[in-house]
Image (cartoon, rainbow, N blue to C red; front, top):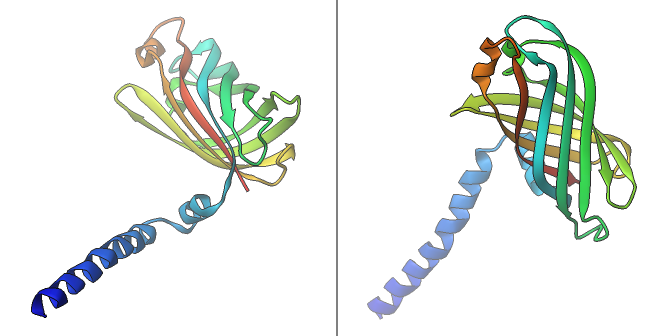
Length: 183
């Protein structure tokens, strides 16, 4: 009888531990993180992105034409006809290499393979480690398909940051991107 009681107690403890761990993990997220985690994903897209600067970024502040281009492969259970997208941004801003680590706000256009478009306004933060700039953003669709939906973006961009010290400057960064449209 004692062996049966021990087995039952251990089985109950074994089932209780994952629940407690999940609860503890959930408590470590901020409310925005929790909201992003519980919202169903409408579309997930991954691919490669290039961010170009003309003239190249140096440590001198100057007007720079900025262009973002990304070609993405997408998966959507709620919209199965969406299988790819192209994202773009064109702007002229006063920038220098000193601004690379500054977060900010961007407006990015997405053209879906269906011909429909979306405009996303995204706020992002930047970290730099091991030669890679990581931009993490949260935003929303402000026009077009998926209007009002929450978005998340993660961009891992690499480039020769030492080019900031040259006459031509830093002309491009590129790398993988993940873009999600949530409900």
